Length: 272
Image 1: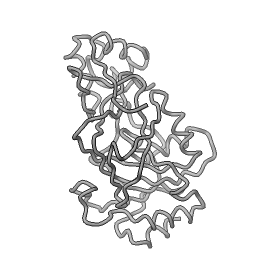
Image 2: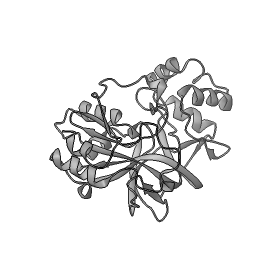
Image 3: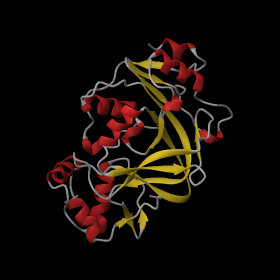
């Protein structure tokens, strides 16, 4: 199944052996590793589309396209799945940036769907990532986008077909999926293309803020938990992150009540 992509002009694509079946510990969310990467989730594994050493410059500053669209289309055709034109481009801000997370969501849905999904790194402007002002079921604080004039971020955009998108939508009870125009939020894909729009999952609870400014995403739950202790003086998020996650999971509404009571919630500023 990998041959079409590996023989196309993407010289650094290397197949990885399978996909993990178990989710990482909640206290380790967002499980992103050292950097965002382009990849292709296939029925028999993951193909890495970035150079082995990664990419130093922002996607929009690359002198040539990092990812070959023709190679992706060829791989999609070889697997007998929908081409890019029949898919929805969704910008991920948390663990949905990784093929492993999406593969688990497909698997846990219990639905018999094709898993083939492209993940392409990108540069996006005037958007940043913070924390939902509520918890996910396992007890961690998930990521959420917010409007941030002048910001530039490297994230991953994913092309889902209709069935895949329905599965992912069902896993995002804390979010509304919104469509954003690239006139308002300029976006450049590693394919070199600049789409007219993209979708994003936006928090229905608002985002956690300090002095009315959203707190940027912390890459360890322990960091945001400790920060909340300092901001509130409460014991709810005090202690080891694994134990805090377990406690929050057992009391799902407590975190939102805490941050609301201390005026630590603001709207994300995204159009609805």
